[in-house]
Image 1: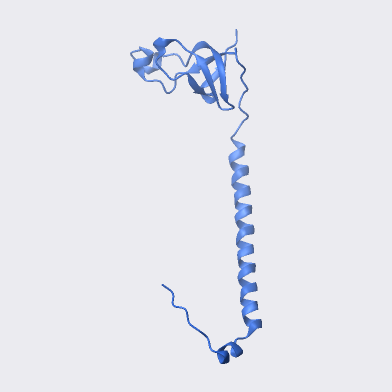
Image 2: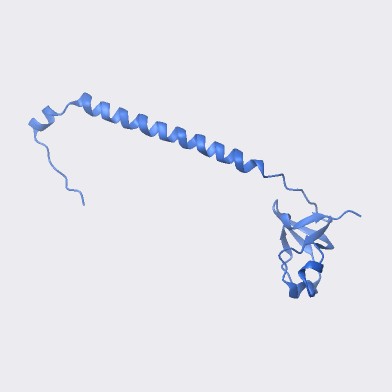
Length: 127
């Protein structure tokens, strides 16, 4: 724990106010420079990350969609090998829009998965 020291009046008279002011100004400029560099790095990182992003497709209630089987267990798919399974199954109807990133689907009870699905896992069904 830091100890507080009491300065006498003679000590305060010896303190050079301009020197202290100069030190503070120097530190403030250093911190401003660091903050500016940090903001530039963040902007550059965001630009790089946004290059690989694309807008999510918007879905409406009643749309028909296919679900990706990429993360399904083989027991759910009832197939002997992953190589021969379908990439998408469906079509299923969108029952409710939960958020811009998730939709609730009308699924068969035999599918045994949670009905709310991320939009990255579905694609629109084209008849």
